[in-house]
Length: 351
Ligand code: KG4
Ligand code: ZN
Image (cartoon, rainbow, N blue to C red):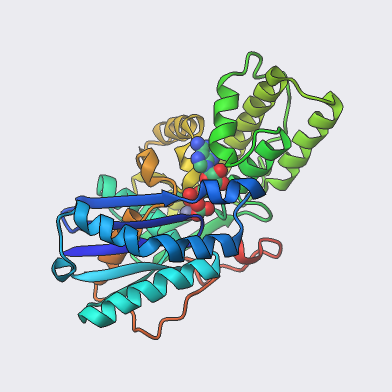
C-alpha cells in the first residue's frame, strides 16, 4: 500500500510518499523562510501563493525520488486543516484533482493527527499513548487511543509554546524563525541561572498551559537591561528554556497520572510538533518518562517540524481502515482532534 501526501497548512510546501512497511519512499520539503523573513512571521497570502507556485514541481520531484509513477500510488492524502486556509485550499484542491483524474481515493488529514501519528511511522508505537503536541499553533496533552480517537487532557489558554519561542526570540532580537535561534542562543549561556523566570501553571490542578505571561516576564528583563548584550540574551534564552521545561514537565506529570489511571496498560509518552525538535526539552521529557516507567519517543528532528511524510502516513492509517473522504470535503481552518473538548476562550482557532 503506497500513499502520497501533501502538506500546505503553514509555511512549508511538502510532498512525501510512504508505504505500509513504514518506509518513507520520498520526503520533499520546501521551506518558505526566505519569502516570510522580511515580515518577521508567516504572511498567509504570501504562503498561499508560494504553495500554488511550488506544489506541482514538488509532487513531480517526490515521485521521481521514489521511482514511482502516479499509477502505482494507492491513495492521495492532503492536509485538510487546521491551518492557514489559503494554503490548505491549495493542497486539498491539488489532491482532489489528482484523485479525480486517476480514480484514486482521497484522504483529508488533520494536520495535528499527522504530528500525533508520526511516532507510529518512525517507532511503531502501539495505542494507547500519551502525547505532548507542541508546535507553532498548538500546545496540548492528548490520550491517543486509536486513529481518529483522541481525548484532550489539556491545552493552552493563550499562546502555543512554539509561538512563545517565536515571540521571545523576536523580543531578544534573534529574528525568525525563533525556536531554533533561541535554542542556539541558550547553548551559549554562561550563567543560565542568572534570570529567574516563572514556570507557568506549575502546580495547577489541571493539565492546561499558558505562555503569554512568560513572554511578558522576558520583556520586563529586556526593558531593565536596556540594550541586552549577547551574554544577556544567552542567559535569558537559557532561563526561558528552563521555565518552559519546568512548566511542560509539571503539566505532563499530571497527565501521566490521568493516563495511567485510564490506561493501565499504556506504556508510552510521545512528543510531537516543531518544538519537539528542541534538544533540551527532549532530554527533560525523556527523564520524566524514565522516572514514571514510560518509554519515551520523539520523532527524528526532520519529522518534528512540518512535513508531508506525517500526512502521507496518517492518510495511510486512515485509508487502511476504510476512512476516505469524498471530493466534497471542505477545507477546515479549525479542526480539533478531540471534538468533545471545550474550546478555550482565548485560544481562538488554535485550541
Ligand atoms: O509543527 P511546526 O513545524 O508547525 C506548526 O504546525 O505550527 O512547528 C513550528 C514551531 C515554530 O514555532 C518554531 O519556532 C518551533 O516549532 N520550533 C522550535 C524548534 N524548531 C522549531 N522550537 C524550539 N526549539 C526548536 N529547535
Ligand atoms: Zn505542524
